[in-house]
Image 1 (cartoon, rainbow, N blue to C red):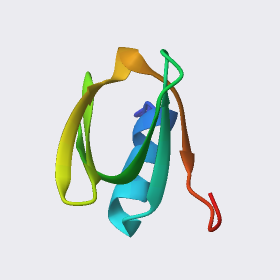
Image 2: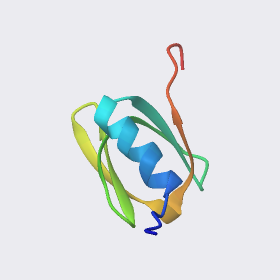
Image 3: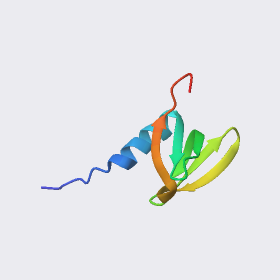
Length: 71
């Protein structure tokens, strides 16, 4: 029987990438970055923040959440 590894992080990021959801990335230094996820791999994410692409290493991210209207 084949066993599939379920990666919660990749599932969350992929669904938000596919739907182009606005997201908030809180970094370990307490700064916030808001934008849309463009790409990701094992070690980093690329976030589009108003036309500027920013590469962020995953080890620098404390939390990721979907941006609600009004945030």
